[in-house]
Length: 271
Image (cartoon, rainbow, N blue to C red):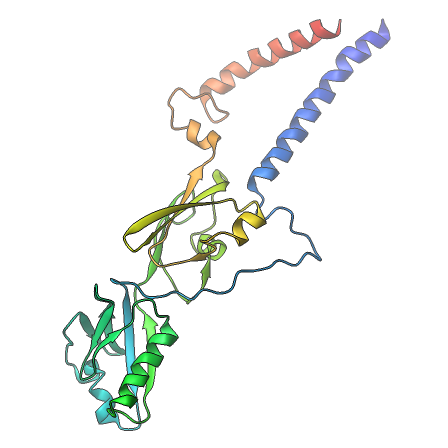
């Protein structure tokens, strides 16, 4: 008889402990990034893909040369003159908007095709035209992106528009710039919406899986990408006023009776 009681009451703590352990493992599995990475494992990264310009993008172009008067012709803002043709002045050069035909209109030089080019390629193209037309002999051209951004929604620390600071931004870097995912954000179902040539394409990335992340077409973020982090089922259930979750009052009122019922069933099973 004594051994029976020991079995009856000794099995309950074991069941509870196993349940807690399973719950802990599930939480770690759902929240840990890049599972499977360990010391000594080398990861094959994608080749860097610098951001390329598209119609509607904005950039700043500054031209320098030894002849300041000549270079000022291409930096109208340095003389306080506002440039037309899809551009605006600033003391650091002229800010251009890429036209639907993929060009920007540079004062004195004329239209330059920039669609699909990176910052360095735009600088090379402008420099080449300046030299080939003999407008400048020794130009130095600096190109900077202006107001390029991606957007974040859902379960992240910072929602909204985030400016792109460099030519290459990975998805993980973008999420860190957004303040990381909240604890209730799904790591295995991150949606990235990318618009190219008037077509918006959805991509789903599981950042708990390193293969899913490193092989994804959206591993490198582009301008105007929209990153949406979906809430996990527990968080989603909170939107239902009648949902019974551990944050709800109803859950805690029903918890004692639920425990008593489970214990009674277990005792009946082990008799």
